[in-house]
Image 1 (tube, helix red, strand yellow):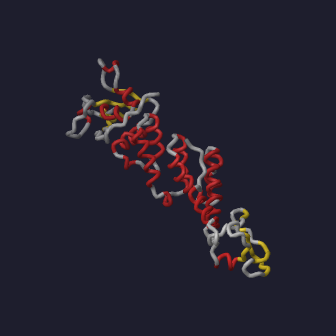
Image 2 (cartoon, rainbow, N blue to C red):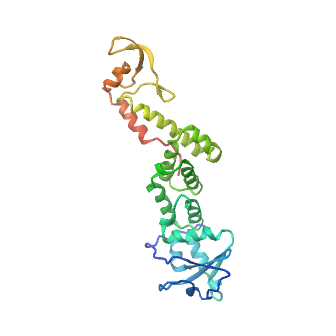
Length: 282
């Protein structure tokens, strides 16, 4: 909306309380919370059949959208409340809980929390979602779960760093998994291309790491072995490969037994390892 996002001190908001619309709870906002802590400015957010009591003073510092929602001249002579008609109460509930306790962010809740954090411009919560991706043990997640996180990060434009770690993790899977997940259908073209490219780069990296520092010519990410003369054996061998580093043709025995005298192969391996994922993302 063009409004600068305020970055407050670490929030100490009281977790919002929800009151079923058909309950016998007192009409006073503060009486709906079973806590001795007094809210600076209790405010009701009504979603479907649920009423959420929030601290508007705290939330206005975190979100310019909440600042607009909870403040204005129209509240001078009316109850401090606002109805949200385009969201589910369960989604708003988990979103408000995540603001107070980011530990509720999980693979299951990630998409909802990130979507609402983006919608209401809660930058601190977007950062928490990003940290969830960057600090998670992605190797333990199923490919389906990684794809869920990746699609949410793309849709709500999380950082390139978060996108890259998810793409790399997904790229470790086999082509059969890509087909099962229907990546070409569900992923945007840039993301799909990055996953496939990273998958090829990982295959090439695995092959390079077995070359003992050499940089042999490859075909389809495999060393191109040919029947030719080995410069070390001085005889024709069934499997030889040419190294672009030391400029020698070596049989498998000498290739694996003698490291390359040139640094070219090691340099190319380091560069590939550092750039597995190629993604244009701003």
